[in-house]
Length: 435
Image (tube, rainbow, N blue to C red; front, side, top):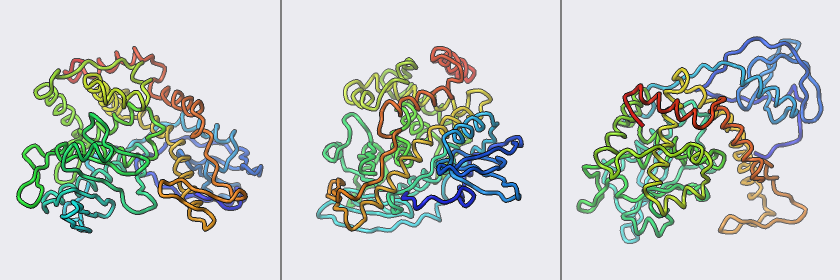
């Protein structure tokens, strides 16, 4: 966001609600804190999340201050302090929506041009064919349920639609129109961060034409919808997480049991079992061999998409291993409470917050009357008017890669990739799943 003139440290207040994560801590002694303007302040650290520190002043007043307003030394102190604190995790048993609460509006019906637009509280989705009422309600319910799921999971995801409006989606009649719209070759659905929209063909979710409308087929399945919606909800994190986490989290949510708009997170193991049974019985090759972790962790976005377009067998191994890892870290690692993965996701949030702030500031800059914005999103501005500076960590690849490597250390926790794979195999073997 665009920030105004610097304020004294003791006047900075930031309210941030993080329902899914709390930090238990021991009392800290008072120390000297320094604002980025160089203003010192004696205060006691009460608590801190990944964005805000709450400080107790000498007069007993509790003040909240954003990390970004503190000196680099103070930020490093807070990071080290948070790493030492035990977590109290609140994993939801169920997350979703009540069917009666979903309101769906038909915005447009243009049969001649094949445009049918529907809107829910948080989504607007366009279809090439008219959706029967029951199908439209089920799609809407899946959308809104996924939104609530990502808000409830302790991954520090705070879904935000573009400029506070609606998340956008497009449904296509067949693979040809899906491909023409930009759908990635070999994919069953695609999310495009530059468009803030996801695309999915009807056949990927089991929709067929009956009479004048499209309806759910016998093999209707919401897995692809939830998978791509997860990418969309995690928009600001996508560029700052390795590809195996991006796809593994989407596979994890896509395989959670979903019925009547409610995800049963507590029954994640049932979803894992159904996934493995499906692979064994219905897919050529069955359950693949896990991909070597040292290679998986090094696979870039570009390499992943190249594999998606050219090597289906390797693609299956990549997705399979990514899902297994996220499930392992969420339910089997350590005490089985997901602590390392939650710490990892919160450590990764620093880049996401910078991306959000930059995008907000840039959007405000483009609205200035002196700025001319082109249809493709590029813009022109007077030389004496400077756009917001792109944060170093977002611009310099080396800086970003170092942060990603450091964050991976949270998951490895002293283990090598080979040792982690041994732990993964042993954990699944306890579930009678041999990898």
